[in-house]
Amino acid sequence: MARVTNKLIHLTGMIDDLVFYKSIYGNLVRARPDFSGKKRKSSPLQKLQQDKMLVVMDFLRPLKRLLRENVFPPGSHLPAFHWAKSYYLNEVVYFEDEGYHINFSKALMSLGDLRPPELMSVHVDDTYLVELQWQDNSEQALAYPDDGLLVVLCAPQAKALFYRTGVTRRSDQTVTIKLNQSWEGVETHIWAGFSRPDKRASASVYLGSFIL
Image (tube, rainbow, N blue to C red; front, side, top):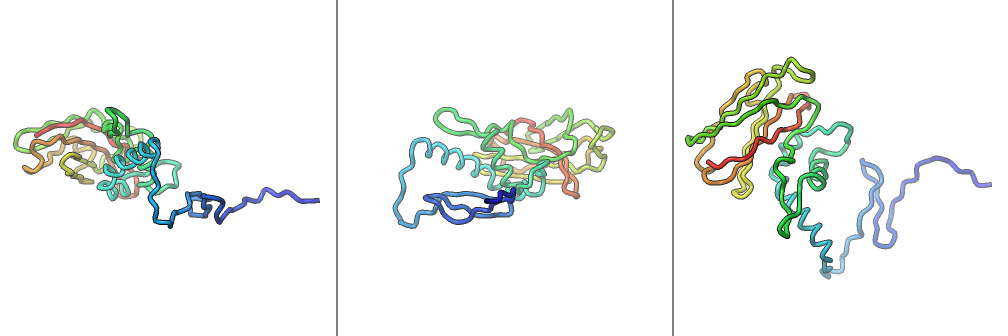
């Protein structure tokens, strides 16, 4: 009589066009690579998926280091960038006017268990000064007076990115950032959050966009 056990089976090898392999994240499967040198023609659905991935990767690639240092998704064992890629594909990108676009208000620059900024406002003047103000909520749960402020400014059309961690503390309630003339005339999006050196962060808050 055959004996059935509940032992986990690890598949490796190739079946038809699928390759099964083991990784640190468990059993995974991918399409068999094509070494024939022939270019496969994408179907309309595949082309849409490729375009979607391209838009997400174009936006995320410059943020790779930032995300690695400030994204700590609870309960996930995925590396920060892989988690962010999945989140952006499912929650941030949208289809309109025959193309994919980034919904900046849904974009995350940081994530973790810290309390995010509250009542934060932005003031921009014509001398390239960006002033941020917020409420000191360090008396609330998962918030600490010395949490460092993370500020991210991104102008995708100009391929410009600025970010700083620990520019000031949660309890300071205000900070001013000086930009230069290269940011003039382009739409700039801004996010802020809090982080700590012990791999903790808050969800970032989208503060809108401006043109200098």
